[in-house]
Length: 140
Image (cartoon, rainbow, N blue to C red):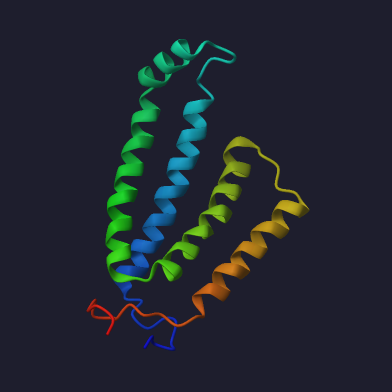
């Protein structure tokens, strides 16, 4: 049976790994946007692909995604997917705020409401019981 306390098993290491997931996703999304801005508009596919492979920021983005994959494998080893994945939705907030700050993107009332609803959903999903054991033993 699952633990009724939603935070049972949320060790400092797991909390740090989840936070790292959000940071990695935010950085990757922002750098991806930055890299795409350097691509030619309305160019043929071959020209665009050549530009992608010659743009170092795309290599950084791929590297960040690989680090994120490695980190996520560790998170999933120690946490329920139904608990961990919704927490990563916090990156909707971090990416939106950083995009506003760095790229001048608009955050209006509708987008703000959507972000608040997502955060409410993250909180609600974190309240359910978890089956992953704190000591990483398989559930019985």
